[in-house]
Image 1: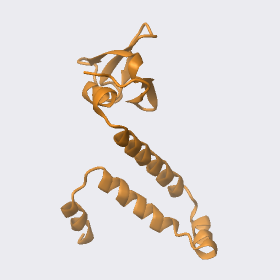
Image 2 (image 1 turned 45 degrees about the vertical axis):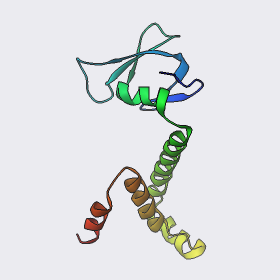
Image 3 (image 1 turned 45 degrees about the horizontal axis):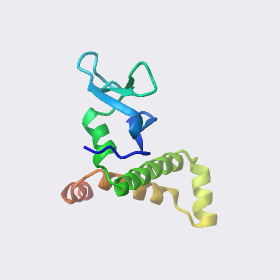
Image 4 (image 1 turned 180 degrees about the vertical axis):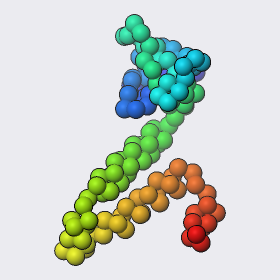
Length: 133
C-alpha cells in the first residue's frame, strides 16, 4: 500500500496530521466512545493522538482517496460553515437583506441543507417522502 505524501489527514474534531508522518493506527477497544475511536501514532510524538474517526477511514484518506474526494470534502465543509453562519443572521437583518439586496437567507439556508443532505447519501425516495409529510 502506498501512502500519499504531503496530504493533510483529518483525525476528526479539527485535528489534522500529515499522511507521511503517521506511522501507525490502532483501534481503541476499551473506553471507546464519542471522540475516541483510534490511536494515531506519529513519527514526531511520543504519545499517540486520539482520533474520532475509525482507523479504516483514516487509512483510506492516507492511501486510497483521490484528490477529487479531498476537494469534495473541503467543499462540504465550506458549505456546512456557510450554513452555520447564515443560520446565525438575525430575523431583522434577514428581512433587510431580502428587501434591499434581494438576498433570501431562508431560501439559501434551505438550499444548502438540501445540498448537504443529498451529498451525504440520502436517496431520491427519501427526499420525495419529505415532500408529502
